[in-house]
Image (cartoon, rainbow, N blue to C red; front, side, top):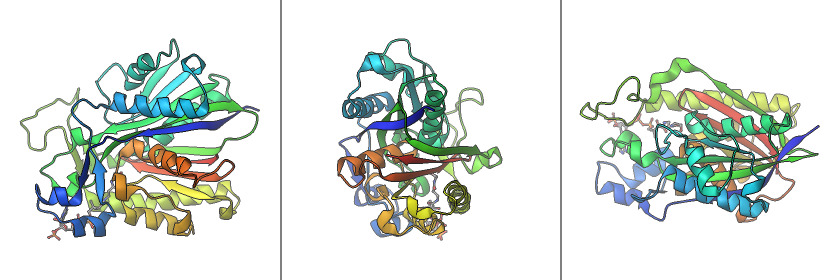
Length: 322
Ligand code: UT7
């Protein structure tokens, strides 16, 4: 039996940091409101010359360096993103060229905030079935470009950044289990309502920006984390103590706390970076993972649970022996 294991992690954050106090100067909000409702203190925002591919490339390079693999070793590249550089080619193809990888499949996965977990699930299946031996899975987002900076209900929530892992074939797991799901009936609760085939109209109120019914999304997110907790409990035959670290999608500290409660997970074992990064959508889990791997908090052999939820709605989990 072939398994997939995480051989390296990497991440990238733009240098430019925007604090809640900075936002107070441009919109009717307050640091206190943002921290109380979301736990967010600051976010990184891409410079004009930074893109989803440039950030994803840097995160991938760092993950490949940690894994000790070169361009010739890579036989699959998957990018989870809701903010691709271009309509096509895929951001994964742009990164492939810049990495110097030749001939491997390279494609993007569109699953909003669940994009990385979707990509991980796919790459895991490729490796398990012999379709690839070394894969790079990236979550990268330039959300600042689709945020309406005049809408305080959404603008305060998002940030830019990228995270990546190198997955390699191994005799032992690795990825212990993964599940991905979607429920399209909630399309309009969290979406960018403009696009290629429905049309772009930048003069229309809102433009091509994120639109969200915050309260409804919040309620669905908490209910879905409950479903994910049940699936995890079933995977573990009830042995929740086997999980060393819970690394959820970083959307809102209140959602993270509610999810941890469902999993009966003390907050000491929950990784939360939402205060520093805000919601970086598909990048949030690999970004948080890389930070705790490099700080030494997460060690080889630890069991991690990733859980993501986002527009679609999409959601998914992966349990990983690091
Ligand atoms: O990645 C997955 C997708 N996203 C999420 O998971 C986000 C899910 N939703 C949320 O995190 C929360 O719904 C928000 C943080 C977006 C909003 O928190 P809330 O507790 O649901 O607030 P609310 O939308 O019910 O608004 C409460 C009040 C309103 O004022 P009134 O009508 O009570 O006078 C809003 O206008 O807060 C007001 N408000 C703000 N005030 C200051 C909304 N945004 C702001 C703001 N600053 N930035």
